[in-house]
Amino acid sequence: MDSALEKHIRQVVQQVLSSLQLTDIEEQPSIGRSKPLIVANWKMNMTLQEAREFFSGLTDAPYEHCEAVICPPAPLLYPLKELMQQAGISLGAQNLHEKPKGAHTGEVHGELLFELGCSHVIIGHSERRAAGETDEQVAAKVHQAIGNSMIPIVCVGETQLQRELGLTKEVIRTQVESALAGVTEERSPFIIAYEPVWAIGTGKTAQPSDAQDIHREIRQMLAEKKSIGFANRVPILYGGSVSASNIQELCAREDIDGALVGGASLQAHSFEAILKALR
Ligand SMILES: O=C(CO)COP(=O)(O)O
Image 1 (cartoon, rainbow, N blue to C red):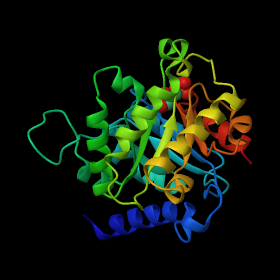
Image 2: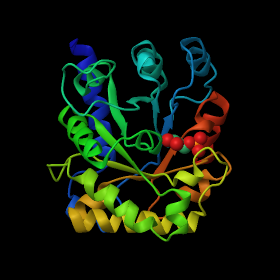
Image 3: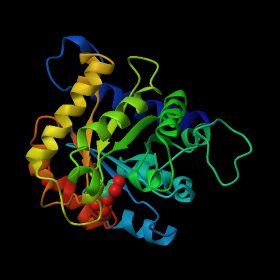
Image 4: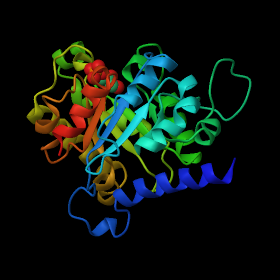
């Protein structure tokens, strides 16, 4: 890898680690994040032309009060790298393969994503789980992400039916605990995104107090499975119809450390409106 790129990636990872306040973590009584983290998941949207227009439409970058990450479709990672750097936005991937390099046609391995400049990678999104991705694959992908110096953003969340059956906590516990099987080091970076499936792309956001309750539960699960220090430094993001009109109320809750945003991240003005609302 070219050394300037490697240096930049190490700086970004270092910034993230220091914003997680990894020193004296065990002594911290509460969550260690100083800035909200806003992650844009562009899903299977945008052309190269549209993505370039998005960056020329940004008026507020770089963002001092928030940490911003954009996860474009994989073919856009390389062409957007410089624009992202200029805007002070970190680059993330939407997926990676659970194995290192090999005969897996159409897949992308973690080492390549890191080389392309990714500091983050989304894992286990409900849209991928619905297409057959298993908890075991999620754990293996977490292991690959961490092994390639990227921060895994593991998505968890219940469907409408699971919610109606009262299975929300059970479903989330299984997803969280199995993802943690991929975390071998106590100090490995790790992010959870709670995305209730019924809230994704529907305009139905969870009530901030309900989201807070689930986030608190997730933090307790992390503490039980790992340690209180680990639980306190893991950012827990909320996802599901996040917009400029609800972000403030969500992020005001103690255990909501930021958001994973789909639809509202596709236009420069609606993406920046979310970041501005957090000022
Ligand atoms: O799935 C999501 C982000 O990963 C949420 O999507 P929306 O913000 O469009 O509801």
